[in-house]
Image 1: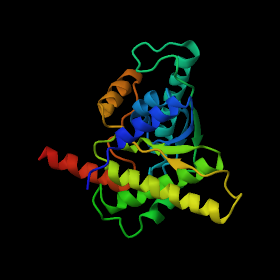
Image 2: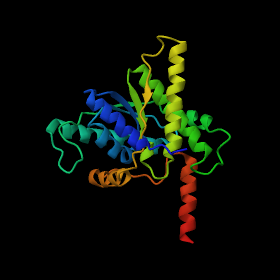
Image 3: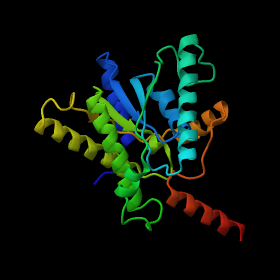
Image 4: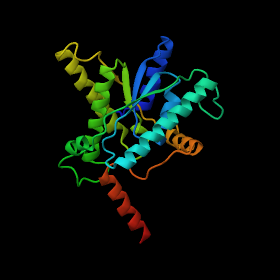
Amino acid sequence: MNKRNYYKELENKIDEFQKNNEVPKLLLHVCCAPCSSHCLEFLRQYFDVTVFFYNPNITEDKEYRKRVAEEKRLIEEYNRQVDEQDFEGMHSDAKARKISIIEGDYDPKEYFEAVKGYEDIPEGGERCRKCFELRLRKTAETAAKEGFEYFTTSLTISPLKNADVLNRAGEEAADYINAAITEKEGSLARKVFFLPSDFKKKEGYKRSIELSCRFGLYRQEYCGCGFSKAERERQKEENKR
Protein backbone atom coordinates (compact mmCIF):
# COMPACT_ATOMS: atom_id res chain seq x y z
CA MET A 1 0.00 0.00 0.00
CA ASN A 2 1.50 3.31 -1.08
CA LYS A 3 1.96 5.99 1.58
CA ARG A 4 -0.11 9.07 0.88
CA ASN A 5 1.70 12.26 -0.06
CA TYR A 6 -0.47 14.84 1.70
CA TYR A 7 1.59 17.77 0.48
CA LYS A 8 1.11 16.66 -3.13
CA GLU A 9 -2.61 16.27 -2.50
CA LEU A 10 -2.69 19.86 -1.24
CA GLU A 11 -0.83 21.08 -4.33
CA ASN A 12 -3.27 19.23 -6.57
CA LYS A 13 -6.26 20.83 -4.83
CA ILE A 14 -4.70 24.27 -5.22
CA ASP A 15 -4.07 23.63 -8.92
CA GLU A 16 -7.72 22.67 -9.28
CA PHE A 17 -8.91 25.84 -7.54
CA GLN A 18 -6.68 28.05 -9.65
CA LYS A 19 -7.79 26.38 -12.87
CA ASN A 20 -11.39 27.17 -11.94
CA ASN A 21 -10.56 30.67 -10.64
CA GLU A 22 -11.81 29.70 -7.19
CA VAL A 23 -10.74 31.19 -3.87
CA PRO A 24 -12.26 28.87 -1.25
CA LYS A 25 -12.99 29.96 2.30
CA LEU A 26 -10.59 28.08 4.59
CA LEU A 27 -10.68 27.78 8.38
CA LEU A 28 -7.15 27.06 9.58
CA HIS A 29 -6.81 25.61 13.05
CA VAL A 30 -3.56 26.92 14.52
CA CYS A 31 -1.68 25.82 17.62
CA CYS A 32 0.68 28.82 17.90
CA ALA A 33 2.14 31.71 15.92
CA PRO A 34 5.47 30.06 15.00
CA CYS A 35 3.77 26.97 13.55
CA SER A 36 1.19 29.03 11.67
CA SER A 37 3.70 31.52 10.23
CA HIS A 38 4.65 29.51 7.14
CA CYS A 39 1.16 28.03 6.76
CA LEU A 40 -0.40 31.49 6.58
CA GLU A 41 2.32 32.89 4.33
CA PHE A 42 1.60 30.06 1.89
CA LEU A 43 -2.18 29.67 2.16
CA ARG A 44 -3.12 33.36 1.91
CA GLN A 45 -2.02 33.24 -1.72
CA TYR A 46 -4.77 30.76 -2.63
CA PHE A 47 -7.50 30.91 0.02
CA ASP A 48 -9.65 33.33 1.97
CA VAL A 49 -8.12 32.30 5.30
CA THR A 50 -9.54 32.63 8.79
CA VAL A 51 -7.49 31.39 11.73
CA PHE A 52 -9.26 29.30 14.35
CA PHE A 53 -7.39 29.44 17.66
CA TYR A 54 -8.88 26.58 19.66
CA ASN A 55 -6.42 24.97 22.05
CA PRO A 56 -7.87 23.87 25.41
CA ASN A 57 -4.82 21.58 25.66
CA ILE A 58 -2.78 24.64 26.72
CA THR A 59 -3.53 23.99 30.36
CA GLU A 60 -1.89 27.09 31.88
CA ASP A 61 -3.93 30.26 31.47
CA LYS A 62 -0.87 32.53 31.28
CA GLU A 63 0.68 30.38 28.56
CA TYR A 64 -2.58 30.37 26.59
CA ARG A 65 -2.90 34.16 26.73
CA LYS A 66 0.69 34.59 25.57
CA ARG A 67 0.24 32.28 22.60
CA VAL A 68 -3.05 33.76 21.40
CA ALA A 69 -1.60 37.29 21.70
CA GLU A 70 1.35 36.29 19.53
CA GLU A 71 -0.99 34.77 16.95
CA LYS A 72 -2.98 38.01 16.74
CA ARG A 73 0.23 40.03 16.44
CA LEU A 74 1.43 37.88 13.55
CA ILE A 75 -1.90 38.25 11.74
CA GLU A 76 -1.76 42.02 12.18
CA GLU A 77 1.71 42.05 10.62
CA TYR A 78 0.60 39.93 7.66
CA ASN A 79 -2.45 42.14 7.13
CA ARG A 80 -0.25 45.25 7.24
CA GLN A 81 1.82 43.74 4.43
CA VAL A 82 -1.33 43.39 2.33
CA ASP A 83 -2.50 46.92 3.09
CA GLU A 84 0.89 48.40 2.20
CA GLN A 85 1.70 45.87 -0.55
CA ASP A 86 5.02 45.33 1.20
CA PHE A 87 6.17 41.73 0.75
CA GLU A 88 9.91 42.24 0.90
CA GLY A 89 11.59 39.05 2.05
CA MET A 90 8.31 37.15 1.99
CA HIS A 91 7.20 34.18 -0.10
CA SER A 92 4.04 36.12 -0.95
CA ASP A 93 3.05 38.73 -3.47
CA ALA A 94 0.10 40.88 -4.49
CA LYS A 95 -2.16 37.80 -4.57
CA ALA A 96 -1.90 37.56 -0.79
CA ARG A 97 -5.17 38.17 1.07
CA LYS A 98 -5.89 39.54 4.51
CA ILE A 99 -6.45 37.05 7.32
CA SER A 100 -9.20 36.96 9.95
CA ILE A 101 -9.27 35.18 13.29
CA ILE A 102 -11.86 33.37 15.40
CA GLU A 103 -10.84 32.59 18.97
CA GLY A 104 -12.55 29.47 20.23
CA ASP A 105 -13.68 28.90 23.81
CA TYR A 106 -10.85 28.27 26.22
CA ASP A 107 -11.75 25.55 28.69
CA PRO A 108 -8.98 23.09 29.67
CA LYS A 109 -11.65 20.82 31.23
CA GLU A 110 -12.60 19.85 27.67
CA TYR A 111 -9.05 18.66 27.08
CA PHE A 112 -8.77 16.74 30.36
CA GLU A 113 -12.06 15.00 29.64
CA ALA A 114 -10.91 14.05 26.13
CA VAL A 115 -7.65 12.46 27.33
CA LYS A 116 -9.01 10.85 30.50
CA GLY A 117 -7.33 7.50 31.01
CA TYR A 118 -4.38 8.41 28.77
CA GLU A 119 -2.59 10.77 31.15
CA ASP A 120 0.51 8.56 31.49
CA ILE A 121 0.91 7.83 27.77
CA PRO A 122 4.19 9.34 26.40
CA GLU A 123 4.12 12.32 24.05
CA GLY A 124 3.21 11.34 20.49
CA GLY A 125 0.95 8.46 21.52
CA GLU A 126 -2.76 7.89 22.05
CA ARG A 127 -3.18 10.91 24.34
CA CYS A 128 -2.01 13.19 21.53
CA ARG A 129 -4.34 11.51 19.05
CA LYS A 130 -7.30 12.16 21.36
CA CYS A 131 -6.18 15.78 21.60
CA PHE A 132 -6.00 16.11 17.81
CA GLU A 133 -9.48 14.63 17.47
CA LEU A 134 -10.91 17.09 20.00
CA ARG A 135 -9.46 20.16 18.31
CA LEU A 136 -10.15 19.09 14.73
CA ARG A 137 -13.74 18.09 15.42
CA LYS A 138 -14.38 21.53 16.95
CA THR A 139 -12.71 23.11 13.92
CA ALA A 140 -14.93 21.13 11.54
CA GLU A 141 -18.03 22.08 13.52
CA THR A 142 -17.09 25.77 13.48
CA ALA A 143 -16.27 25.65 9.77
CA ALA A 144 -19.68 24.18 8.98
CA LYS A 145 -21.56 26.65 11.18
CA GLU A 146 -19.71 29.66 9.78
CA GLY A 147 -20.02 28.67 6.10
CA PHE A 148 -16.44 27.67 5.33
CA GLU A 149 -15.79 25.27 2.48
CA TYR A 150 -12.59 23.75 3.88
CA PHE A 151 -10.65 23.40 7.11
CA THR A 152 -7.18 22.17 7.99
CA THR A 153 -4.53 22.54 10.71
CA SER A 154 -1.08 24.01 11.16
CA LEU A 155 -0.09 21.03 13.33
CA THR A 156 1.43 19.18 10.35
CA ILE A 157 4.27 21.74 10.26
CA SER A 158 5.94 20.03 13.22
CA PRO A 159 8.53 17.30 12.59
CA LEU A 160 7.31 15.78 15.88
CA LYS A 161 3.73 15.37 14.65
CA ASN A 162 2.59 12.42 12.52
CA ALA A 163 0.98 13.83 9.36
CA ASP A 164 -0.85 10.57 8.69
CA VAL A 165 -2.49 10.60 12.14
CA LEU A 166 -3.42 14.28 11.79
CA ASN A 167 -4.88 13.96 8.29
CA ARG A 168 -6.92 10.92 9.28
CA ALA A 169 -8.23 12.80 12.31
CA GLY A 170 -9.19 15.73 10.07
CA GLU A 171 -10.98 13.53 7.55
CA GLU A 172 -12.83 11.70 10.33
CA ALA A 173 -13.87 15.04 11.83
CA ALA A 174 -15.30 16.12 8.47
CA ASP A 175 -17.17 12.81 8.12
CA TYR A 176 -18.61 13.15 11.63
CA ILE A 177 -19.83 16.73 11.13
CA ASN A 178 -21.20 16.07 7.65
CA ALA A 179 -23.12 13.07 8.97
CA ALA A 180 -24.63 15.33 11.63
CA ILE A 181 -25.65 17.81 8.92
CA THR A 182 -27.37 15.04 6.97
CA GLU A 183 -29.28 13.86 10.05
CA LYS A 184 -30.27 17.35 11.19
CA GLU A 185 -30.71 19.32 7.99
CA GLY A 186 -30.45 23.04 8.64
CA SER A 187 -28.72 22.78 12.04
CA LEU A 188 -25.38 23.55 10.38
CA ALA A 189 -24.80 25.85 7.44
CA ARG A 190 -23.17 23.54 4.88
CA LYS A 191 -21.03 20.47 4.43
CA VAL A 192 -17.34 21.06 4.90
CA PHE A 193 -14.23 19.29 3.63
CA PHE A 194 -10.85 18.65 5.18
CA LEU A 195 -7.90 20.02 3.22
CA PRO A 196 -4.98 17.54 3.31
CA SER A 197 -1.63 18.97 4.34
CA ASP A 198 1.91 18.23 5.42
CA PHE A 199 3.28 21.72 5.87
CA LYS A 200 6.69 20.54 7.06
CA LYS A 201 7.47 19.39 3.50
CA LYS A 202 9.38 21.56 1.00
CA GLU A 203 11.35 23.02 3.95
CA GLY A 204 8.16 24.34 5.52
CA TYR A 205 9.39 23.78 9.06
CA LYS A 206 12.68 25.55 8.26
CA ARG A 207 10.70 28.47 6.85
CA SER A 208 8.61 28.67 10.02
CA ILE A 209 11.82 29.09 12.05
CA GLU A 210 13.00 31.85 9.69
CA LEU A 211 9.68 33.67 10.01
CA SER A 212 9.69 33.26 13.79
CA CYS A 213 13.07 34.97 13.89
CA ARG A 214 11.97 37.71 11.50
CA PHE A 215 8.93 38.63 13.60
CA GLY A 216 10.46 37.84 16.99
CA LEU A 217 7.77 35.30 17.77
CA TYR A 218 7.60 33.55 21.11
CA ARG A 219 8.62 29.90 20.56
CA GLN A 220 7.45 27.63 23.37
CA GLU A 221 9.44 24.55 24.40
CA TYR A 222 6.49 22.18 24.72
CA CYS A 223 3.27 21.41 22.88
CA GLY A 224 0.85 22.89 25.38
CA CYS A 225 -0.50 20.51 27.99
CA GLY A 226 0.96 20.04 31.45
CA PHE A 227 1.90 16.47 30.54
CA SER A 228 4.09 17.58 27.63
CA LYS A 229 5.63 20.34 29.77
CA ALA A 230 6.55 17.84 32.47
CA GLU A 231 8.03 15.47 29.92
CA ARG A 232 10.08 18.29 28.42
CA GLU A 233 11.38 19.26 31.87
CA ARG A 234 12.41 15.66 32.54
CA GLN A 235 14.28 15.55 29.24
CA LYS A 236 16.12 18.78 30.07
CA GLU A 237 17.17 17.39 33.45
CA GLU A 238 18.39 14.16 31.86
CA ASN A 239 20.44 16.11 29.32
CA LYS A 240 22.23 17.91 32.16
CA ARG A 241 23.52 14.63 33.60
